[in-house]
Length: 112
Length: 157
Image 1 (cartoon, rainbow over the protein chains, first blue to last red):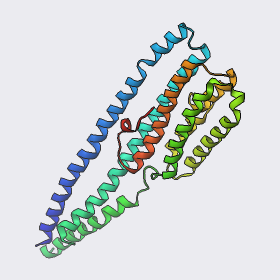
Image 2: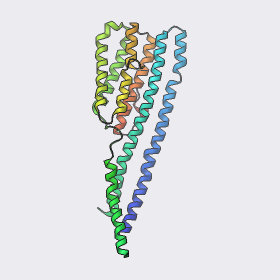
Image 3: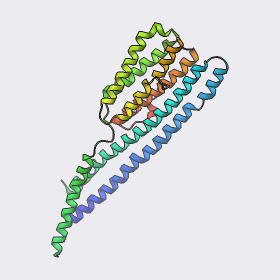
Image 4: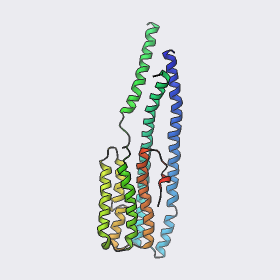
C-alpha cells in the first residue's frame, strides 16, 4: 500500500474518531452544564419565600435570615467555580482523548 | 523539480506532523490538577462531620467549642492540602469559601453560632441543606477530575 493511501486512511480514521469524540465530549458537556444550572435554580427557587414566611412567623431571627441569604450568595459563587472547574476537566479529558486518537489512528492506518 | 523528490518531501512533512501532533498535545500542561483520593476523602468525611455539628448547634456554642474548633481546623487543613496541589486553584477557592467566616458556609455558620450562643431549629435545618449542597459541589469537582460524572447523581443531603 502506498504512503498516500495510508495517509488518506489515517485522515479518514482520525476525522471519524474526532467527530465521535467531539460529539460525545462536548455535546454531552453542554447538556450536563445546562442540567446542572437548572438543578441549581430548581433547588433555590422555593428557599426565599419559605425563609420570608419563617421570618414573619418568628421561626427565624433577622440575623439567621441574613445568614441564609449570605449562604445563598456563597452557594452561587461555589456553583460558578464548580462550573468553571468542570469545563476544565472536560477539556483536559478531551485533550487526553485527542492524543490517544492520533496515536491509534496512526497505528491502524500505517499498521504500526 | 523531479516528482519523486516532491512526493518524498510531502511524505516527510506528513510523517513529521504525525509524530509532532501527539507530542505537542502531550507537552501542554494539564488544564486542571489530577484527582486526589485524599481530597475526596477530606470532602466526604468533613461533609458528614459538618452536618453532624450543625445538628448539635441547638446546644450552646461554649459547650461544643472544643469540637467546633477541631472541625474548623480540619477544614483549614483540607484547604491547605488543596492549595498545595498543582493546578488546583479552583478546588482551593471552593475550600476558601467553605471556611471563610465572612461567607455563608461553615465559617459563617460557626461565626453566627458563636455570636448568638445558640441556633434555632428552623435555621439549623435550612443551613444543613445549604452546607450539604456546598460540599456536594466540592465532591462533584473532585470526582470529575477522574471521570465525567453527573453532579446530580452525587448529591445527597
